[in-house]
Amino acid sequence: MKYTADIQKIPRKFLPEDFKLSSWETVEPFFVNLLNRKIDSEKDLQQWLIDSSEVEAVLSEDACWRQIRMTCDTENKALEESFVFFVTQIQPRIQPYADKLNRKLIESPFTKELDQTKFFTYLRSVQKSIDLFREENIPLQSDLSVLGQQFGVISGKMTIEVDGKEYTLQQAAKFLESADRAKREEVYRKINERRLLDNDALDELYTTLIQKRQQVALNAGFENYRDYKFKELGRFDYAKEDCYQFHQAVKEHILPLVNDIYERKKLKLGLTELKPWDTEAQPAGISPLRPFQTGGELLEKTIQCFERLNPFFADCLRRMNEMNRFDLDSRKGKAPGGYNCPLAETGAPFIFMNAAGQMSDVTTMVHEGGHAVHSFLAHPLELSSFKEYPMEIAEVASMAMELFSMEYWEVFFNDKEDLRRAKEHQLERVITIFPCIATIDKFQNWVYENPAHSRAERAEKWMEILKEFSTSAIDFSCLEPYRRFSWQRQLHLFEVPFYYIEYGIAQLGAIGLWMKFKEDKDAALTHYMQSLSLGGTQTLPELYKSADIEFNFSPAYIKKLMEFVKREIDTLLHS
Image 1 (cartoon, rainbow, N blue to C red):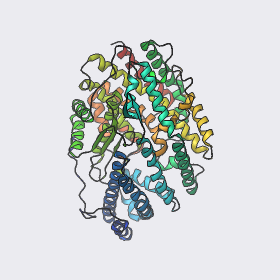
Image 2: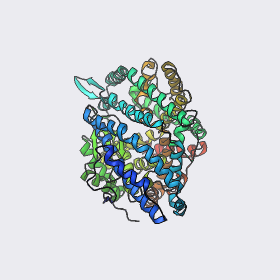
Image 3: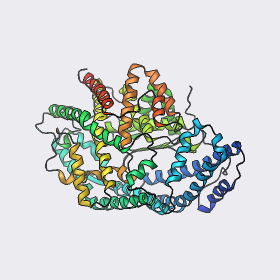
């Protein structure tokens, strides 16, 4: 199938082309029209769905731009107020209409005449939304949207001084690659001391979020927010017990490999003990990898890399660049992290990140580039809701792109040894990310199973879980004050609760795809794009099957994939 990156804005046929959301009064008539419209045939229903989808796309994109602009400049009060306006004045008024429209769809006799193969997952999601909707949760969900963004506001102000110059924490991380061990320790401690200054603010923010989330769950008839969130996230194909099994498999089959990686690092550095400020360092005489200098250079090199992998992928990034859909460089006042934000009406997404010239930035860029390709492939689907794919396949799109693109990283590295080191770094990260995922996921399960816990109990439980998944090869002695609150670095806990196990499930899928890619590149990429182009129109196991991979995170399957990655690392080490 021929794919094109010549993405086009969906033409408006229900809303005026010049419609702009300035108040609730400007948009409510369109909801009233949809609610009161007579549906006397399947054709009427199809048109009603198209018009509903148009409203969803316009409002979704409006909300996304408000959030994008705010994260790009957290110190601009007007941008924050614009975002808060949407989540407090518009979103709460949309929700009752959305529930009524959902019920109108489910109750229509013509819904049964729709193509059930194409509409199954959508209708299942609509029914889930009906089941969860509670009027009393509307103000709580509005509060949660505003509160979640406060993490970015607090974190965006964090800077430290190194050698007389101010750096964001993302920029300062490059000093952790220095050959000067004293400098690494100095910067590590400065970063963590700076984080501790906002420890109380972030702790209080998280406590408030937990309390409000628990109330949302209780209002909806759930014992705890974890169980509520599993349903809200549409986890129809696995349960909490599967997540517990994943945690155990990480300890059994992955943590020993993590230990090997850091023991090897300790030998390379010639150290008797490896400290956390040593993990990104290089041996004396070997310079840290510096694959680019600016965000513009990072983008250009990524386009070159994608061109060699598949020209369509490169065309997606070029089209985004034409549309000014990137903010890549780290700076003060910018929210932390990185994301690809799909834009439902215009189609081309927005990539946000905090590049500082490090190897990890290349991984982030190609990761978000994979999400972007997914957005392009799903955009032609006729309804906005069809494009709302499960996160477990969304992260396959991004994590597989990390591994696929690695075959063409010579655009970032002229030196063969630097290229080998970069690939080694990436494959080590493929393994070392799993204990982090298991730690965060197990922590969240405990947090929401025990919502009345104290701050002290939370810190103690975090330390217990952290130690459970920590490598024995790194010496953390005398660093407990920093580690007790290290969970506060994880934006997912504040902004997108329970969205983390998806990274683990998807990493397994990505490794499976990479195995196929090593055997037959063209076939693997064909299956990859075929699956992503389906959006959310099939179940998660079906989407994995379309990608020619298993939806499986059993211990035996994890063991098989880890053995493959280990062989690839061993090959690199001996090349």
